[in-house]
Image (cartoon, one colour):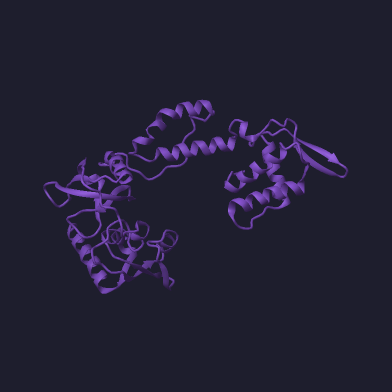
Length: 336
């Protein structure tokens, strides 16, 4: 039985009832105690059934749970529930099988956060945790996140993260792909975002009016300065990326209503993994489907369209269609 937040609340409520010597808890009382605890936590009406209550008790009594020493005492025709040992509590017991599994998954997940020195202790602590909680160290991993541990710039992730946390201004050396030499910039960092296994730092650069974006793998040096930090007063980064794919947002660009024609074999893929949050079906046909998107066409958008090859055709607007067509023509010339 998976232990989610609501289940944990119910187990704690039952544990309190079972070790309370001052009251007899019949199943109706246990059900009321669980539902009251859920209501207090969720702030809205939520309840469980009698069947769920007994499933919870069965789980708590099992080896997968806590093997609770629960006794059933008759009181007339009714039965009340109480621990045999009133000093017992599930909070005083070793981790059960489900908690061990969750702990192991949490450790493995945290270890995927490449580049954060604050988490290096996990590598050292993991063998001790495996021994203390009898985690199966030999178990093969069954979950893998997309990452690139060999990507340049991961060592700067910690510096930028700390600068954001403590409001420090950075001086960075950034080398663009199309320029022979690195250029120095001042960055008031506001936000870190990962896209396509790359990390990007976003913030205010006095050379420009809009938000500047620096891919960490293009940085050659980062130094902290004593300059006064300029706070972010205007950009909500949760909303900033709503109208784009990826991270780049061309200056003064407008949202376009874009229609794309997808071949039948690609339609299930595009439906299950939408190109953008605005995606909706415009027309359905046996051999193709037309999707409508509302977004700002940027570098990442055109790269994604090119990756679909002949299975996708941009129908409108004409400006977007022509820009993509030109890029495809130039790519085709490489193979002539």
